[in-house]
Every structure is written in structure tokens, then in C-alpha cells.
Length: 230
Image 1 (cartoon, one colour):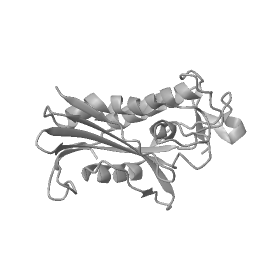
Image 2 (cartoon, one colour):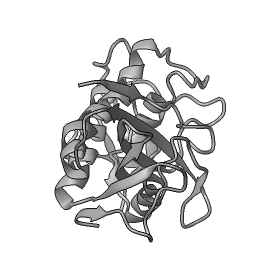
Image 3 (cartoon, one colour):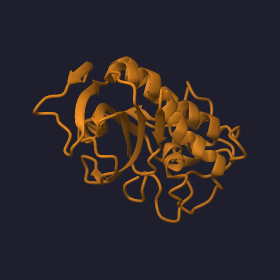
Image 4 (tube, one colour):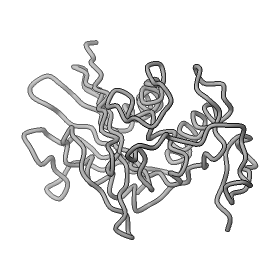
């Protein structure tokens, strides 16, 4: 099976539903691609995507990630339906590039994109189940070439958004579409609120976890992550 991977580094500065939907006149690619399906994100899917993100955040915050320093103030991500709706909408357009996003309070959200391309036909549910975890891992794997500090790089922008300490909300969408005569594309869009990759800032404050010092409380599930006070 021929396959190529397009880890689209579009976690930019000031940028960074249940079952499956058939393509329709209401949901169609906004270009020459042919939309084959949109994944309706189930509770199980949300848990899968959140756990994938939070496990990598926990790994980094603990100081056990490929030479990266530990984090004092990294938040646990929770699911956000508004961010997910925006991701659903963008994934349905089949455009392999980022879009500028605002949350309900007109604040910038971050965005990570990933596309898997294969010559073998499939369907939206099967490919999501097979690829979603690998896609999030590909974003994390940019840590291999990351040097901790305040400078942004497109080569590591997915990673820094994924572990941006003050990002607290996640919402994702996934589409499956045909590109040209031979390629079938699985396309994951994840939006982050608030945005990471802010100018001249590191992704987190390095040091042993210290939620209290940042007016946060320690997570009960993830030993090295924090949650906001109610």
C-alpha cells in the first residue's frame, strides 16, 4: 500500500457529533477534492484524543521526555465543543493549510493539522481509528529536534502547541476525502484554546511541578499536570 504522511506544521503564532457523516451538498470540499466522510466524534473518540494529548503533556511535565526540562505549570486539557465545531468545519473543507481562529471571546486559538495519504480506499471511521493516535504522536515526535526556549520554529510548532502549558481546551475534527485520481486522505484538525506558540515565550515554566505557585491545583489523574481552580 502506497502511503505518504504530511505533518503540516501549522501551529502558528496567534493561530497555532456521533458516528460518521456521508458527504452531501451541505458538507463538501471547498476545492477539487471529493469529500467521502466526516467523523462524528463520539465520547470514546474524545477520550482517545484527550488521553493521547495529556499523556504526552504528562511525559514532558515529568521531565522524562527526550532531554526536555520538567514543567511547573502545565494544565490538563479538557474537551471543548466550540473548538471541535470549528475543527469539524475546517476538516470538511479539505484544505491542507491552517486557518485563523477565534474562540467565543474573540481570543486566538491554536491549530495543528495532519494528513495521511494512501492509494488504498477506506472509510472515515476505519482510518480515524487506525491513524488518529499516530497523528498526535507525529506532532509530539517533533520533540526530537526541539531545543527548549522562547524561539518559535515551524519544524517544532506542532510539538510546542501540544505541550503549551496554559492551553486548557482541545477540540478536533476528522475528514476523509479523495484527492486527484489515486489518493485518499485522512485529515485531522485539532484546535487549542488558548493558543500556544506566543511570541518570545517558552512553552512552559521549567522546574518541578508546582501548581500551587501558579494558583492551580494538582491533577488527580496526571501526577505532573495541573487543573484550574473552580
